[in-house]
Image (cartoon, rainbow, N blue to C red; front, side, top):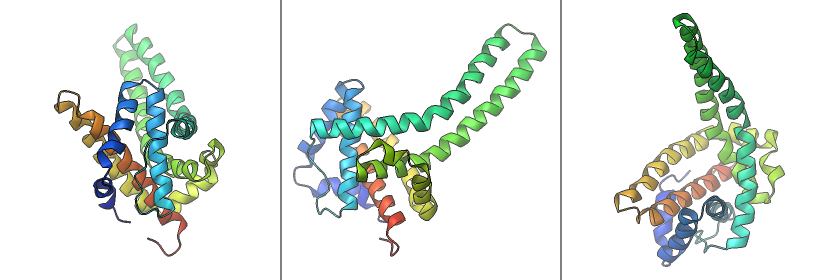
Length: 216
């Protein structure tokens, strides 16, 4: 897996500024819809990497990107349902603790800590699985592809180190996207789409690693 390529491929395209700033404007300035468009745009990068397109950074195509981003968002929501289910008892226990004595508060604290640990572990597992699901959505352009759990888990099992690198890349992308706020907020119009593009590239590389028996 060529991890560094995810950080550099954007600047190998002579039109990189234009190709970043338009998704950046839409993704940052338009609530919800913009984030879906940005996600769909990143998955076209994923698809380009999988297809070995020489210049994988695409121009934004609003309708196509919104459609793919909507499908990926539904997939992400389904994978997030267990987190929501786990979070409900924490809210209930917190409400109970607010009206209880010290013993009740201690018991509730222990229970909520356990649920919090479960949420953390599930969140880590989701960080491996969701990029694989996104890869399948990019390739097949369908919600069902991302929710084909056996196929998604199979990708992760075939290339665990690749998806571990995607997790590392996700942490790096989170840091990079936040840097834009330093430049009076304007910088995020570039750092956010850059970080998203980087992740799209990593999703594509990991998918190839899992599906190509000869590796990359």
